[in-house]
Image (cartoon, rainbow, N blue to C red; front, top):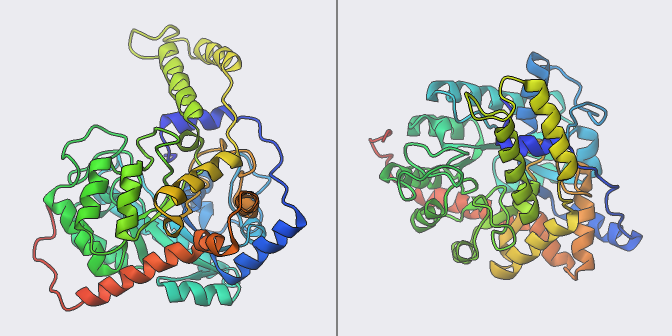
Length: 422
């Protein structure tokens, strides 16, 4: 099952035309290279493991991952382009569908963790599995890409803290409290709320993440759940792949009010590249396109072309020609970074691209993992200092990781609660 919502799948199918990536001046290129040699560029969220699972099947265990640039549908990630993009660290998402039964989610999560570790083992000169901030720095110093694991959905623990502890023992660095659906203990941003945020067990999950030294990831959760988690946590939080709601009023994005709480908490918001989370015009177009597709082929009686799939597809294609997707650009992603830095502070912003999780519809200039330097060059043109860009690249998330490790140490003597399930 492909990861994203029908809106983003629809956007990917429409494949808006991309122009060449932003070109950086030689001076900017040299400055960016200097920053990223000294500070690892750490992306908070990449869905390459799931893309490999979906497209390669059993071949994912043995496929040559050096250069996938010629494949269709297009991968955003491969080793060659990671090197060109000067990536120093990556949280690899081990997402599974939230619609699966709990036990199946656990089983598939374990397979995804195994896949990430398998990739690192097959390419030891390029990847190093890491868990702590110091591990990241050592991997970067050795010329390898520090590989971390993010479990992208609270449903993947099957309402059981023992499963969460097992993921931690396997090296998982964060848990996203929900994905696209509300679960038994937490409300999702993209589903109807049931709990007004987090339940008592949801609070226990947050505190157990603190005790384990895992980061609390608040991407995908409702604003009420964000506020609950920020009130409960003893460690800084992360948003592994979210953008600014003041610019694009999508519920997956972070409001200014919550950005101010993130500043107080010491956390970090890592900006997502998905066009629907970057451009309000694109978000509205996506909703209109999804509605038109439903209008054409909605079972059992109401679709205009119901029972005639070829006619429905042809009429939808005609609609798309008359209503092309708005163009989304690298500059608009930079706008989100600027806004979060202005409201939360430059110490609280990072990059969480969501590469290989949003189909082929990506901002012009940010089509794959080779393009990070172009984004940094754009921010340089806007007046960002090298010191602040170093924070954006990796300094901020490393600080958050270190703080979570310190909280883990401070909580070490505490006994684990007997209650493991809601």
